[in-house]
Image (cartoon, rainbow, N blue to C red; front, side):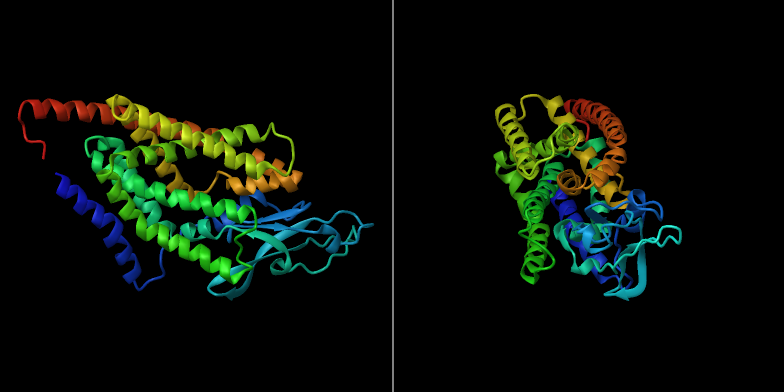
Length: 362
């Protein structure tokens, strides 16, 4: 049984990427792009105060509006579009003033490349390879929601590998929010790509180690659980926080507190309660599936964008607050996790009954 689990893991982490790479067609890329962009800028009369979001390239632009239009004239309204000119196989996003003959607004030409911005390259790399990642998270998530505890080692291997990628994602996100990593700097761009490749390649090794060193899997559980709870709670408490320059630090502290708390919890309780482990596997699987689905359709604000908007732009922040769909995600998440818990408990009970009767379970 264990050997078959290992072979299945090798298939998931090695064979599928090779198939995707060898395909002569254009690689599958799953990004929100124009759909996500339109959900926030859904008409030709966009109000821009200090910032602009590019969901296509995951960039947070800081705009000095006084450099774009005359201060004494009415505030301009904007529209966005994708240039027909394709650069590096990508349509370039542009914004410009919406001309209004009645209100003589004069605007300078806007070149986004010349503006200050924060870029999130690690997440962009995930989005660009979203087809493979979404496939794995949804497929393995469905499998674990049904038999995750029966095939415990397989579950541990996959989600330990997933947690390893999430760890490096959080690490890069903080550096990117602080402006330490940016696509404007070629060295930073190379570092982000190198870290991403390192995380993906070595994640399977970390997954294998997690079933050999028993404490590693509890760290894995604590990391994913802490990120789940920490992110949701920070969304909820962010609306009550005052606008200040310490939100990034607050975010970091909240995540660290919950990650450490859940790691301590799992190190203390370990596998004393079977059903608690089953439910936790279903929670992690549901989180992984929703993360994968989000790569397909979007809908939940990218949390670093949410934090930066809170610091710098009230209009943008209020727009994101109105369209975060967090309640919808929570309802779907709880529904999937509940069904998974039912199937895991039922299938495990049947599995153990057959095992006690010496009936083949293979």
